[in-house]
Image 1 (cartoon, rainbow, N blue to C red):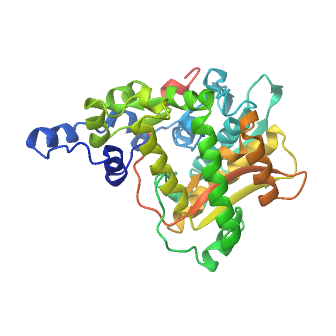
Image 2 (cartoon, helix red, strand yellow):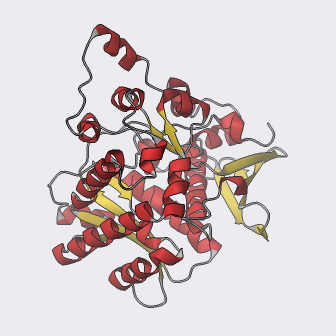
Length: 369
């Protein structure tokens, strides 16, 4: 993720100042991973309706930005959509629940992009069980109307920044209630701030889960361009720290390092600056439920964007590995009734503009074309 200048300066801890010389200005100018951002400007530029819809779908939110989708074009009007098991998150998502939710986001954005051109998409989910495609999508020309939420697809973000102290007005919460359960009660919000922070710390201080994230960090433009997935750490300030040896993979794995402690402080401030939460639950926890949760999350993300609000998933407390079990139980006790599953939890509020997330180009996600 690209960090703001304010958050980056916190990493320095007053120890280093990067001079604003012409040389550093030139360095800053060249740090944007332009090639990794091309899919955002290329979306919608295809004549084939399936490729056109897929060019939008690859912009969908997904866990750790793994982008696990693979598409296979079939006949003239069909796409088989698979999830790439090589991109699993075995430590933080051992049952692939969150990755499946990400596939639901992909399928909903695919459907909405097709509808923008008047095409309906009939989805057959898991037609061969879990070992086959996640979905077979059949395009039905002239059978759909555009979805107003699709207008916000290019502006949609997951805002990993502190929100302002502005509360979410009751009217805004009510407007979003059709997409998710919106939590604004001060006592519950305070409890969730505490829970999301403690759960983040569990993930950050559990060696095997933290290593999974660090292994997926992309340090600087060259790494981001080479692998435009995972957690992008880019921009001139961060790359300056990397060159100075103040931001390294080793530090991110060492809880005693200055870099690790500064990262903890940054996330503490971010998670504390949360005025409201959005929650998605389901009566059961089947793969179809998880796909549905992803489709609902994508629509919620677009709806919050349309209303000038920011959304950021904070699902550490919903992860299903042993060290997180107590937080998992606490989250379910706070957010739903016995027997139901909390599929997604997100911070909701007013946040700053954040940059687009790097993406693999569409051709890299196609099994055939």
